[in-house]
Length: 366
Image: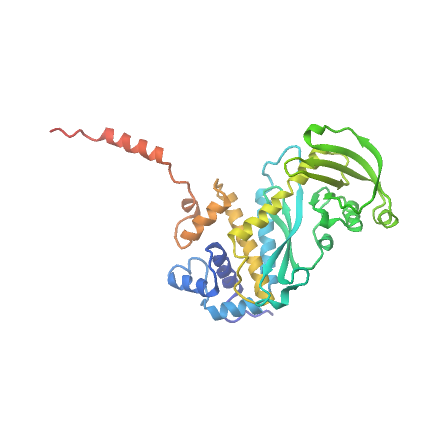
């Protein structure tokens, strides 16, 4: 039988770390100081235990980070259900994911366990699968910085009929063939060392940036054994960045322009990484242990998902950044969220209302 943990509960720890993410607290001391200053309000926020810097630091160091990973997975499923009916580009598939990774830089002096040979510094790597419907994380993992991207293909959930859009770091023919056999589709940017032979070609409209649409087969012995079937090669030219892109896919039914647009949507995951690093606490950490760092990264993703869920449930038109700014300065207000996040009336409406009121007032006679 599981016993309730002594001291700070896991739920109080979760609330404290998400509070730190939403209000831009820089340290555990800042979190505790702010919560104590509003001691009469924190009960209504869900806190039940006594929050101190010592017990919060102890929990971050000793309580398994997998607890926060499990909470993140629950929030991912809830967000996916809320955003599943969002309108998507009609020319693109409904179930599509972008897969990529991002380095989380650390200080080697403070985090020697995260030494990264390639850069000579400390770092961790965040792997993420972003749903292109709603731009929500659907799967995530934290690994050492030197962990190869292509090995993540062994861990991601594979859905038959879904599309997985990736950069060239994920070109592993054996793993891509596993996706193909599972009934999933992939669109991946090709590497130069992958040798191909053209089987047939289809006409393309070069005014759209497309250069060719071909059915190809692999030529080297190892690649043929790894992926024994035909592939589709779509080449496009990005005039804005002066870049030539060569895409490989196992989808032969979609128009070639749709394949190019699908890869273009992969940029959303780059914007996601940029957003969470700018607006959440992923540059300075509350603890030095690996467990504390992992816990804080998962709490940042939880904070993002909670704001996204709130936006959808309350049907708020503000951006996530605007919502985060409002929540950060009014988190102790005992008001419904829809009132806190409601758009204030614009100046013109207020002016018209004041003029109408003046017309109703009796005239002052001298």
